[in-house]
Image 1 (spheres, one colour):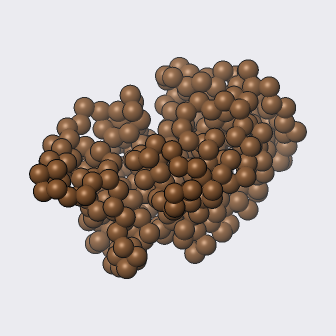
Image 2 (cartoon, helix red, strand yellow):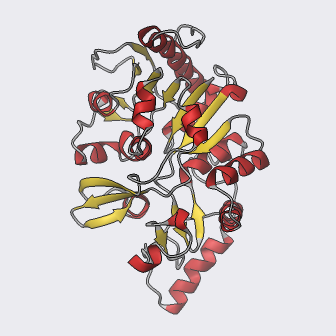
Length: 344
């Protein structure tokens, strides 16, 4: 059994080849939900859906977002209507009262659907509509996610990190904004001063997530702040990770990141934007997978390989390195029954 912590595109790219190393039927993926937004009344779970669509064989792997070949008729018409009516465009965060009224699962992350600032495909939208409707019927997010995973034929067990809402709010020199506004609309332009995981103080990991965290864990090359941070901000998660073998794959090569806003976010919360900063952010990690060209020396076991992931072959190579690192982590942390891995 093995559990992956997933957020953004880094870990899903790793999962693209992980089934060559880890048995899908014995693999659980815990996905970040701090990036979720309610857009025009529909709950969008980007990090859950990237894993969902990838596992279902429909992910657009050019963008690592949405469904391959999806149409955008509804999105395009929303743009046309806003233009024709002279309505405000761009992210329109609903007022404070609206943020916490009604559907609790979407607290602190509600945006107007007028000229929606995130492009949502038509088939993609059907997923969000189904998810939101089932939540309104009284289902938990965990139950909804497993039902959607069954519909897409996933071979792994996909779990949201919590059934409670956690919203990643980025405090910048231009004010506070939800992560999706900061990254999707503003493309990471404002200077980061702090990152808040609103709701994490009362949110709890589900029993399913707690069980998954008792297995050996792989933290993929995701953003340590906004992909993994919302998980570890919840009570009990960091402690659970301290008690099981954990391997982390660095999204950096030294101080160079493969993609995404990790450098600005890490600097904004006081970490060095580098592999060394990742190690500082992950005190629970027993071993690391680093790139062959990464000059960083750590005081924890390291397995090195080419960590760039451009395709399934690359992903399988990095997954083999993670498997080998788990063997190192197991030897450090004691016998957990995890099978020994091969060379990277």
